Image 1 (cartoon, rainbow, N blue to C red):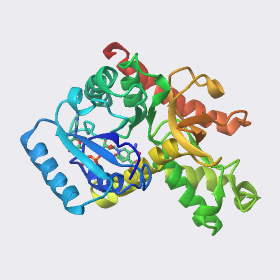
Image 2: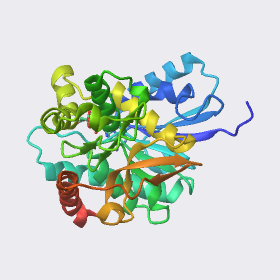
Image 3: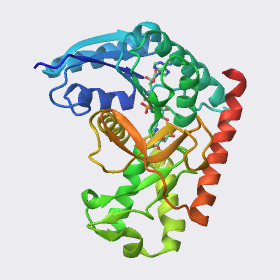
Image 4: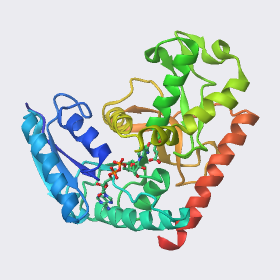
Length: 328
Ligand code: NAD
Ligand code: LMR
């Protein structure tokens, strides 16, 4: 084992996504089977949460993962993010009874302002940040704005679960294998307004649009199924998606760090003005990754229907940004 260990911070480490995520990071599924890791696990100071975190750490220890060379429990991001190379911000304030969207945004703004400031102060200058906790795009925006000394491009939000959900729906509709689908993407916010787009997708060289050729299915089945999948899982399980969310987080970080070999994936990233999306809005775009950097797939034609969908999800995100403006 010759590689230098990297530090991976995970917030919400005793939560249900944490439980589906940590063991896979420690086994090398995220950063490679040759990359030792030190886990920096963050939970709220609450005694019950810290005790549960200790339990998860006992289990991690009991796996005797060869790549897990260190493990720490924290309740303060100023220590939890010290020198961290990768930060997965999973913990967030869930919507409580009687809570309005504005209250939810404000509660999370507090968490992600503090975490952004801590990353700014103590993390590696190259830290790669993935925000999973909802509202993920706006939380990533808040963390990014609170960390002016770090590169803005290193703050990302998770749209990969939506991307994976869209892949599976297209595979089911066409009767083809997920592994053969290329060039699919999801634009916008991780919310029901997202726009999952298979106009450019191919399967074994054939255009998915020709294989499906059904705009009614696109508008009345595909988009609502992908967009409302999170709510459908909550309805069925009584809890929000956890294993699939953890899986998407692994995919996102894996591809960002190790590359996509030219394939498209979806990442929520701060816009540089691509496709008319205002600078810094954290938006789902098609990207490829190489050498630890993502690159937006540019120059794709946007037809009238797609523009309408993109405008809708953008308007929602701009509204969220407005809602937290005074807190930044
Ligand atoms: P959970 O309630 O099981 O766990 C969340 C954990 O975070 C809790 O243990 C809580 O104590 C902890 N926490 C809260 N605030 C924290 C803070 N400031 N610092 C450290 N820890 C903190 O929730 P979960 O099912 O694991 O989901 C976590 C988040 O991920 C939720 O916001 C959920 O909506 C979101 N989510 C996002 C996606 C996506 O695709 N982006 C998918 C699924 C879930
Ligand atoms: C999901 O897409 O499964 C989650 O974001 C749903 C949620 O509200 O936690």
